[in-house]
Length: 274
Image (cartoon, rainbow, N blue to C red; front, side, top):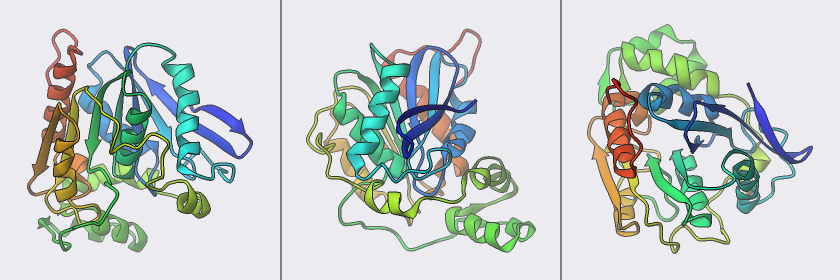
């Protein structure tokens, strides 16, 4: 069920929430929607006592129209309204994929004393990019089953093209890709400036950074250096994966998230396996 926090008719944040326990704010990347993160994350952490709160960034999904969201900190103001409803006190977790990783860092910078853990999956890191050239790791020629538009989307995103990743694309990615508010993306879904700079605010909680060695969208080298910014960071660069890493290496992603939650002190349900 879609829920909403709303500042005005043109400034709102749509979300849904699943489970119970410590709140986790999950943020998708640009040109996607909350269904993609929910699609890969639910099987990985549903056994944990975590209340997963999946948001649509302004300009995306059900958080449209968005003309009232004019700058990056307007996005964070909406997230603060969400926190007042879903996590009014105590600690919470933040997870972001792609450009959602940047906003996850910005959320943590606003609330460094409340953030119990921060997970960044293929995060966009502002600054000069050093990205590898596009390279296909494996191609089983499964994309011929897609129509031309979806085939272009799949092949532009996935460097591992197998029956398994095609199914994940159809289940989690394709339904989340749709129309976006380009003006909002241009003015608000950007790297800042932010009143609380993610590069200067100390976050002492456990931080997980996962990147794909063949990520030609955001790269992996700047992501590795995030380990110097967070004193409790675990930084992993995964072989044989690109920007779609949580879909291409779900077992690795799940294991790393399980370890991250263990480090934070959030136990698995009795009888559950990582």
